Image (cartoon, rainbow, N blue to C red; front, top):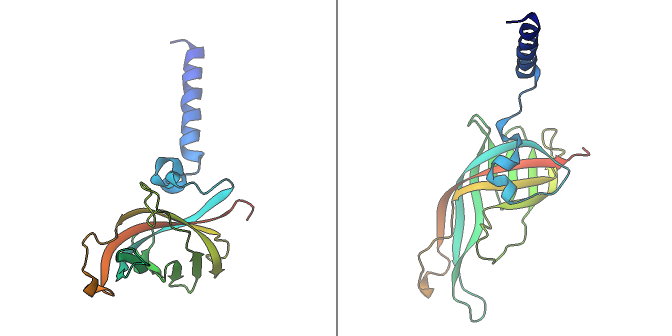
Length: 184
């Protein structure tokens, strides 16, 4: 092998090693295009701050329908334990759109309007506009994306009218991704 060819090979190998060892590692979840998160676009100029997982229950109540509508199940609230990426409990999720972290931080979101459109996973894939973010860890949070929800669906069984007011606690799991604007 010629000396020039050996130099080119050594330089190429050295360049590859530099790229491998000196490029900062990105978290696996930083690229939304590889997940279902891209199915509900948040818009341009948003930065992912952190993500959590919640496991708990969605609480449904069987209610009388309006006017001539039949009774149906409606979501009352959620109660869930919030976990970090390692599965450690870091807070709780409750009252529709409130995250309270064990360090005292609180994020309150505004529930988005519900859609009756068929094929949309609402209320299971949502974007919450944050109305309150208290604490150093969350002070820049402006949006929360609810994705990858499993279970927690409206109860399928119907009831007779004499069961109005009954509640069902349906287990669920979801990911909550917390965002800010790029300008922050």
